[in-house]
Length: 424
Image 1 (cartoon, rainbow, N blue to C red):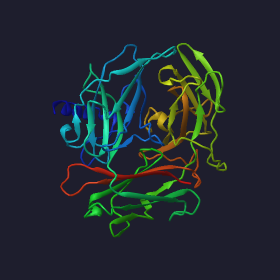
Image 2: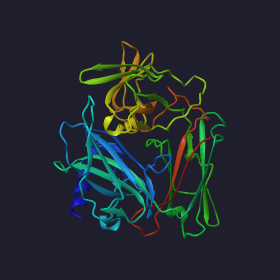
Image 3: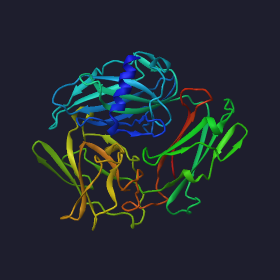
Image 4: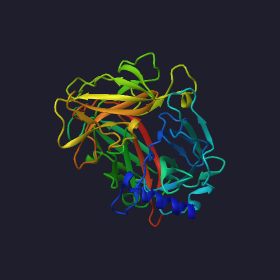
């Protein structure tokens, strides 16, 4: 219990890097780096497609956390497992109430990079493992910290444990109360529980919908639209209407010698490689063009090498978005897993008055990337894609629906069902 309390205090101390829920003052935790030396934080279940960090309670699957430490020395890291509510805030359970085994151990699986201009140490961690396993469903977070500084986690990573006791159905349509086959997509959900007792679904169930893994436009629905025998429906709900956006922009930097169609040039200025992308077009007024994406993710890859985790190099990738005049009432950001879906200074672009363009350089590992340009008005927390990407009803967005259950008197949110699919 002592270690759990220490880590919770440490997370609260790191207030500047977390969003807070004003109702209870607890931090909202994300999958992201909290230390400038930690890069390429990814957590996935490689047995699933898409690669969601999720597994069934009591099953044989597991999630794998990967990250790189660009420190000049090899550091020793420890981890803790936190159980969270449906809003990704640490709940009040003790470790013994959600974990069997011991979680206060070290990350022993690491390897130094091979023949890279930017040296790094690559770490991997799987859960469940021989030391610990979850005993209840719900949202979980792996918190990793340097053993020399247990007051500040270096990263947090989300994953989910589901106990599928309800059936979740979903259909997505471009026919909405706002428009028909223009700019929006409507998510309609049904939750059936023929063999499970939910006495007050309007009070005990919570449905959360995510679009392309984004964290800024998540829909949280408490009340069903209508009820049927042992089922509830969330249909034609205006809170489940999403801006359609556009297909993700892509670039591939897996090779230093073969340029992707969006890559203008590779250059080496000691000690880093620099990769310049072609200036991006404003797509808001262009015709919709379909192409295959990975829904905002990135994949580490080095062409012709079977072990890119330790052989792929890092480079500064330069983004340019021509805009005649800068926005005076908001900021422009690069949105996607490459910026950990943040809408803060780490993803914010700067306006260059000489080139009349927004610019940004990101230190990225070799591989294939998806991204979008997003505008965030001052005092808003949700990104607007319309100024640069447009909103096209045909966009093949990926949606994830999660059903949480907290019966009266319970201390935590159970994850009892989910649905993942695409608008087609």
